[in-house]
Image (tube, rainbow, N blue to C red; front, side, top):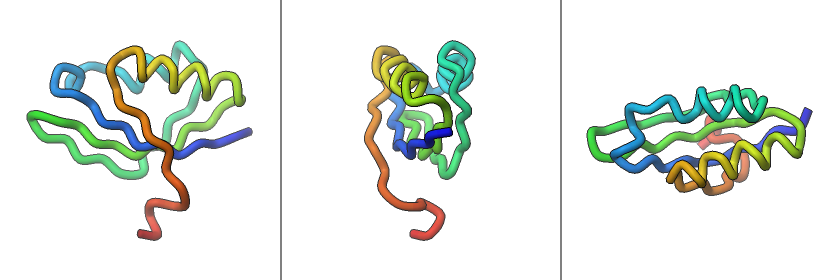
Amino acid sequence: MPKRMVQLIFPQKLIKKPVIYTMAVKCKVVPNVRRAKVTETVGNMTLELEGTKENLEKGIKFLIRQGVKVEPVMGDVLES
């Protein structure tokens, strides 16, 4: 099954909301948290998403509509 590595930047208003869980359930995508840093003002997370190509696209579009900034990540973040 295809995988995609993305970096997510959450605005303060979304930090305490279950955005990743909701995306996973609605879009049938399996998230794997590779790195995360959350403060009171911003959340920064690197996720590996797994699912069909169509579901990965749906998941990313869902996150963007919620107000999350989504950027692609190249390589394995654990190697950096």
